[in-house]
Length: 457
Image (tube, rainbow, N blue to C red; front, side, top):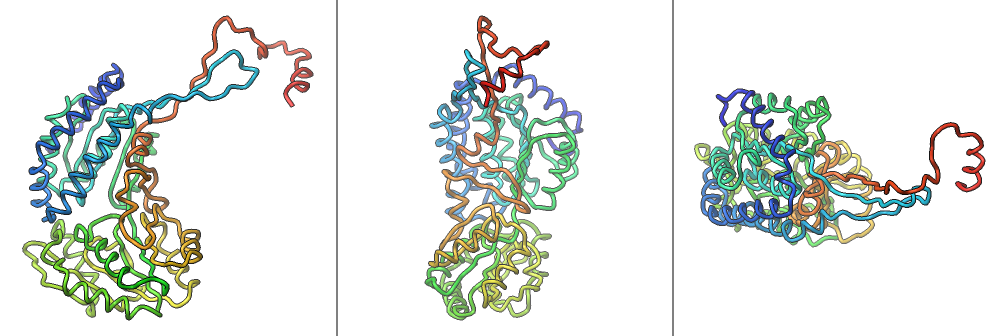
């Protein structure tokens, strides 16, 4: 589907998927397993095409593309398929004595038609990861990939067509206006990954329809370095996380706040690494000219550049801003690029005040061996996830939930949490027709209140 298609075509697809879902075609364990098996087979067959699309769209180094997009998806798919029966199994719970005889249990049911809106920074992973969980949970899916990553968009259309009937999973395309129109449709669940600004629009439109939804957003993810830590280890791990995918990761370290006691040591260690590690030669490029210009405008004159820019190829060399101030342009919005500001703090109370002004980030990085400092920061500053003495790991572990809080979104997914996110708990109470009515609640009540007071205390 392209921008030339009318909203009527989307409505027609939505109607067919609702009919497919209502007919029960997505519900059986066999159907879900078959879909996951088929998707795995096609992903493996198209591995090189995945790498090529990511190179065309973002110039991703092959190692980063393989690990963060291709293999990550295979890991999640296999984890879900292996455990799906166990995760979705109904479980019994107790019942009040005045219900007896009866049985009570909780089951997990899929929502129906899921609308997934994916971003451009990890165009394959962030399209298929929620899709895998949604399909495993028993839903149908309409996927809207990012129009900015055109090669990945084309490939996703081919992959989905090779695996699914359109009544089960389909891809639609279009720009922001088209997505706005699509959100007026009667979806059963919406999953959005992107900016906070657009996320608010998605939330408003979903609320208008009373459609449950998940928002995976971002924010300025702080990285705190205190005087107790090994600054060389900190420098290496911070830079590795920051420049992965050219800094275009929603939970990448956005800036560093370092104790004045070790600031010079940290900057020195970072400079040494930036001079010898060839990030400029092996780093993803900026997605488009508009984002490239946005990043250039926030650069202070005194930033340190490690390599050369290539405007035609949209390659921005890594930047370090060693003497950034809290009110600099690069500290006012999420950077989403290879620019790392470093600000200084002296007192914990001032640090906490400054950090609180940024809202609730998707990730919070703490480099400290001081347990009291770690706990203080986690208690005062809310965030979607925390990683202590490293970066990015909390967003790459399929055994723990991933998601934001407050300004960085709401809802969780990944692995088991993802399957649970795309299904809901359904309470069931079953009583036999022959059961006596011990506490039949029908008038006239007469003196029954006396009995209730006697036995229900």
